[in-house]
Every structure is written in C-alpha cells, then in structure tokens.
Image (spheres, one colour):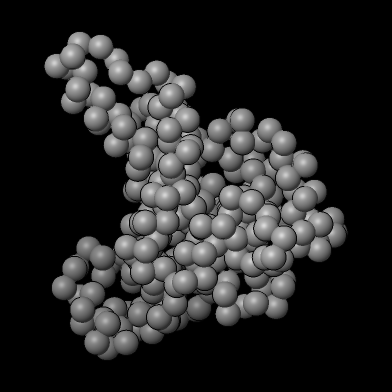
Length: 248
C-alpha cells in the first residue's frame, strides 16, 4: 500500500480524489483517512482498481456533444445501477469472488456507445466541410453505434486491464447462452434489464421487449420474482447517492 500510495502521489489531483472518496458517504468508517496511504489501505487493491476505473469511465460516458447527450440519457446513473445489480446477483449466486469483476463490466458495458458515436461525428465534421454534404443520416449513425459499441467497450476494458471474468461478461452480455447459466455475461444482461425497468436506460427503445427479456433471464438464471424484487430494493436511493460520489 505504501508503494501504491507513493506512485499515486505523483498525480496530486488523482491522489486527492482517492482520499476524498474514502472519506465520503460511500464508506461507513467513522475515522477519516488522513493520508493517501490510509486511503489506499482502506480501499484495498480491488477497491482501488474500481475507483480508478470509475474515475476514467465517467467522463467517457458523459459526452459533451449535444447529439450524444440527447441520444443517450443519464449514462452514469445507468452504469452505476447496472453495475450494482450485477454485483448483487453474483453475491446472490454464491460467486462473491467474481462480483468485483462483474461490477466493473457493468460500468463499462456501454462505454463504447459515446466513444464510437463521437468518433463518427468527428469524421463527419471533418469531411462535411470539404464535401459540403452530410454523409451519414441520424438513423445510420445510430445503427452503426449500436452495431459496434460492444467491440469498442471490450477493447477499452482490455486496455484498462479488467479481470478475465469482466471481459467475458461484456463480450457475452448480448444473449442468454444455453451453456452459460449464471455466467457473468448472463448476469450482466439480466442486470441491464432490471436497471432499465427501474428507469435506468439510455434510450426509450431499450424498453421494447424488456418484460420478455427479463422473463427469459429469470428462467435462465433460475431467479424467482421475490428474489428479483430484493435485487432492486432501494436501488434508486443507492444510485442517487453513489452517482454523485463514485467517479467524482
């Protein structure tokens, strides 16, 4: 922890954010961390990795481009809600050792959307000035983003050294596979659906077919509706609290 603190101290702004996080309402400890080494010790290795990913992914999700902001609503609360539900599911299934990795997968699952969306807009703006015409309709732009975002999210996750379980969860969250009951990918897909039903979705069309998809998830993961309600109990209050703290 001392070596980590020494390394982080080379980035004063980052060090300050880590200390501020450990002294926030996200932690219940009564005694505040008064040094960076104490803060790192309180977070632990897994907690520090989570904090660093949160610091990095929040600005990536919250694009300043108006078109992206209009297209994908409240991306940070959406990411936090998805990650929290996925984490709780892994604990529910007795796979606590995989919970941190799947939490990170929940944070990063949709980060490819603003990244590829911004890239396509940048290319269009660079070319439209010379050609004098818009080369991609809004519909084609959106379909391109939705068709490619998972690959981009996965590449970001690899670059940020997510654990293998987190990478696999992002890669396989596109469907429920017969041979992957209670895997990270199935858990993440189900968590995305539960979060959306609770109001944490990026686009209104994300709710199309959500009831059928959740029913498929309950069957695939062998989750009853009573357990499902427990998973989302107090979610809105928790997300409201943590969205203003985590990644700040």
